[in-house]
Length: 179
Figure 1 (cartoon, helix red, strand yellow):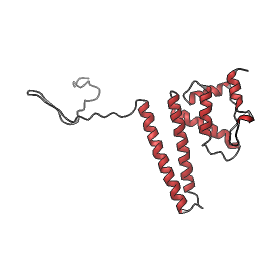
Figure 2 (cartoon, one colour; figure 1 turned 180 degrees about the vertical axis):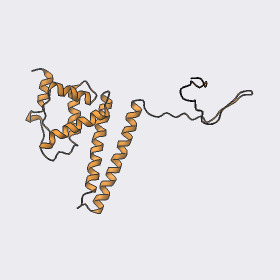
Figure 3 (cartoon, one colour; figure 1 turned 135 degrees about the horizontal axis):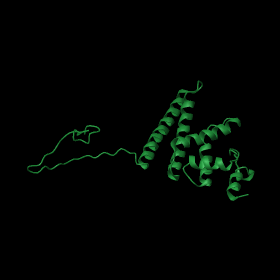
Figure 4 (spheres, one colour; figure 1 turned 120 degrees about the vertical axis):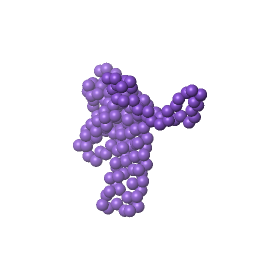
């Protein structure tokens, strides 16, 4: 048995599990897909991130375990992390989103008190603000953050010209009016 196979199967070692541990066996292909979903070539890191993400996924019954794992990997795949840092951020984003949805669900329970509703909405709001910040962080990291240049002072010398306002170039003609 190769070392990576031992690591995949180590999840099944009862000495390494806690009462809330999800036991999963991965084939080599599943492990590779998992690594891709978490933006890493390191199998141990991918499994570690999956465990972390699975710990905040709702699992009420044993039948939901596999579904929860599939949803965790799907969430990661939707973000499409390109490297380990993006994988870490994507894991955090998925966890924050899941926790926010749990809070909103608790706030909406019929038997929930007014105080309980308020507390859960406040928690969800904080989590959803965090999620929005995480999206901005991911976009900045990927170079998709909007950049704005503000010119505060312009000097125009004698004989020079300046344009104040928005300057738009007509589309497709290179700005010279010719196509």
